[in-house]
Length: 132
Length: 476
Image (cartoon, rainbow over all chains, first blue to last red; front, side):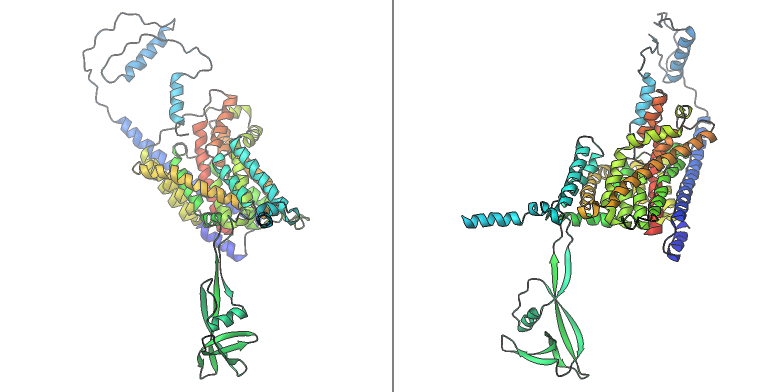
């Protein structure tokens, strides 16, 4: 469509003027990339839609492979961390341990060292930037 | 002893040194070019400015400016007329065949004064057609209509071209840059772009520099002293200079080789120099156009992109770009083929070859031959200085275009987009994205913009290829 328009412009009167070239060029570059934006935006919607469907499917209940035993009485070393924070971390560990095994938290320490990226953040960044 | 001395003098007089030191005949121009080549080599080796390309470019430049190297001499292949003596010798059967002889047959109206006979060395009598002092052999006698069939022999003069001239054909016919794009496609992860398709627009906005520079280059010709200073650029030349703003070496070389091959040397040097100077050129523009608050914006995490999306991406981009803009097909097509290799995951061998061995070989060939186009005659002109200035303008305007659209996005999304990522829309992968990341961290050390900037960065590659397609369609 555009290329046909171009060849007309180009053959009718040698070459388009400088101002017209700027206009044509900018409009075409934007039009092409706008079309691509729209297409891949649609792709994203379709992809995230199918992702949600998968998430919505009921996951089979995981049966514990071994009988639940009462927690050990050894106190975790938590360096005066509020109980709420310990509870949240313990809950996160429990939520992620879907393999039927039981995990014990032995020690929780605050990340005090300044200028050092938290381990999870560092791992995430390393994972994201590996191709570059 | 005198024979030895004469031989030494003879060798000296035939050497390139004499030409180089012959300042009256332009030897100083070659010396300047050799100095420029050495400076580029210094920048590549010591400062590590795009060494992979700058080093071969500089060496090609050095070699072509050593007088008599002949590395860029074109192949000579022409038909040469016989001299009168050679024509007689040919008829006589005594001429020596140094080159292949081609015969052309022509009909000539013969009158008595034209036709004569000569006796050859072997005693044979031959009819000849005499045209002034020139004689041609006549075959089959005089025809019924009074004409004769004249045999006109030619030498085929052939001289082998220089090594770089043969290698240069890959640039001239636009073969190397798309092959480089194949390798780039294999190395590029379009995931960040797919997870945030709005980045495409930032890649488009950063092409602003190309078109503004085109306009500026053409307007230079309107200056009253433009003709005298030889700074009038044709549309093709202006388009080739403007494409420097795409900050994409292969695209600049591809476009220039098709539109203004005589400017290839200065444009390639300018394009690669500015790409190396991205960390110096971009930050002041980025800071000038954004507020502290805008630069501090932390963007939300990108969504994960499925394999199916990544596989469909190159197919769709190729189809849309090629259908809309057929002249962008070689660049976009090869870029996307490389990316399909990568994302399909089934042709690992091809992917490895394209992004390593093939790309390295082509880089060497492209570098030395582009450097070899920078001879003193084409490089040492007022136009070269202007190309370097216009290239800088193109680059700066491209950066500004991306950042300004980033600001628009910041406003439209209510502060969710950091305008700094717009600057990465000028290609120069991944350097421009790294600059955006660095500038973001200057304001907020916990901010990590790299992956967000990679989207516009790879969109810029597609954008500059599309812009090149537009210019090729308009002026090719």
